[in-house]
Amino acid sequence: MSRRFALWLLPIALLAPALARAQGASETAVEAAFLAKFGAYVTWPGGGGPIVICAVGRDVLGDALDRATAGQQIDGRGLVVRKLDSVDRNSGCTIAYIAGSPRQSVSAALAALRSAPVLTVTDSRWSSARGMIHFQIANDRVRFHIDDKAAAESGLGISSKLLALALSVRPRSGR
Image (cartoon, one colour):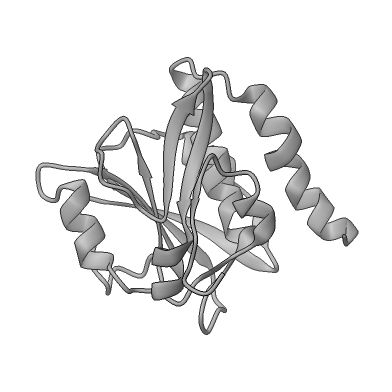
């Protein structure tokens, strides 16, 4: 394992579980930290340009996502945060954290992004609808499930290192 990769893995594999006791603001901070790191474990078709993390719907992450991404880069790509009421294929998102809003439900946002090369992330607090990554509290910790099949259908590759940290993985066909 390369040293650079190990430095990215360390916050997720070691620090996040230690910090992930789910109590209000700390849960939000942990989810924001995960969102800032997920891009290091995903490949997109075409790649290039900044990684745009869209917080879609309710502003449930507040400033935590801005703090988690401040000054961060992944493979030389800057991290940019955008807050949106709704999303579609042309919103310019690389990663979409979908919390739903009066303008667009979580299910509608997921449908709008289906097959687009956007990593969709949802949270069990806001809906039972699931993105490619779905946060859930398990044993008082922020954990996640991964739908690798949906990621593959959108042309995304999720690293086996991230898959190994998931509570469950829906495998892509042929794996």
